[in-house]
Image 1: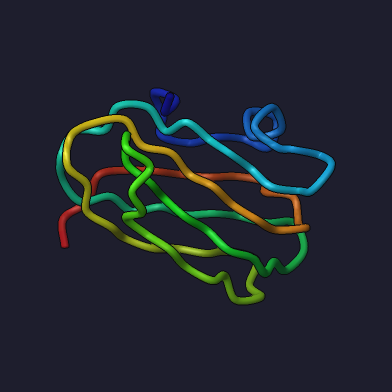
Image 2: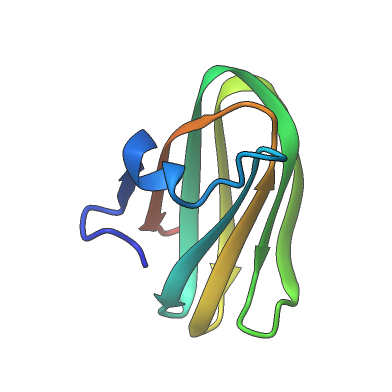
Length: 102
């Protein structure tokens, strides 16, 4: 679930990482309907694929990450459980998810 601050640290994210293939599977928890802004931070520059799915694992966001230290995107969800899958060989050092207005 989302920390009260909306921010995950590298230590928080470590438990969600598969160290064999470098992928993350993060349960975002139950999100209220609305618009969200996701920010990802990586130590070195990162490339990879990101997917956010709903409770039925239907994709809401699918994105290829360009080689930048910080990635940012906005998306809209309906109420329910949501999940983030990230395939990257680079370790995620921080993640922020907050509601936003477009």
